[in-house]
Length: 247
Image 1 (cartoon, rainbow, N blue to C red):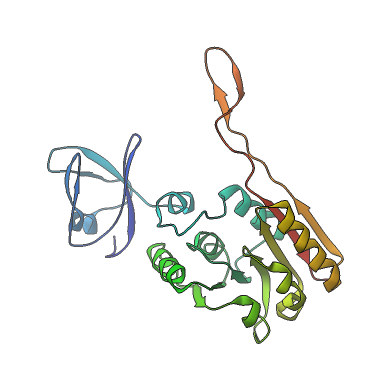
Image 2: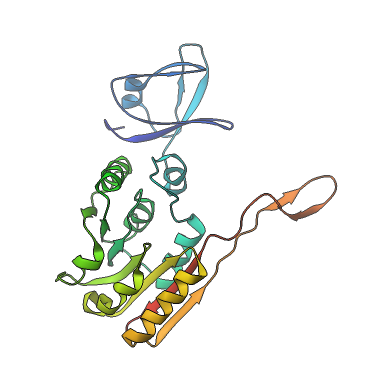
């Protein structure tokens, strides 16, 4: 393994998310000498000084979603998955993202796309996102500090996908066509119906014809001796997603 590489140390339901470095990790099950990871392979076992053994695993996107630092509520994996599948995102695509937040969506997109440029208006959020993206090991995701409402007016780059998870989306929609490649998609995530309506009104005013809005719900199943049913403790609703395609 390489210095700085992210690693999961996992045993049953206990997990530590660490980086390979010349430091010790102090935990309730003992001290782990993280420099030992340099000589290990994925699937090897590392022991604490108390003899507790943990398997070394490579983090995947869902792990990053759970363990990276957050500056707010990131878009959920179910919604990210729908964006990827409904737009057909692929390794040749370039993406413009706005409303970076913690960088979770940008990381998911960056694991597939050729290039992702993401804008965040709050510099403190942008710094956290850069750190998270670095921890994820992605070099094709660029975080820019700025207000996309202003920046999109002067952008001279073209994208295959534009993703917007932010306030005042209707102010951005009129300029989306200027930065989209032919056949490209713009996708808007809205947590509230009122925000979704504003988006649709902006889309109509901009003259887009190929547009659809979905609510994707998710229900975890509960299994017990009494029977099987959808869980009553999990929230299945997260927001509304509008897909806009330039033709």
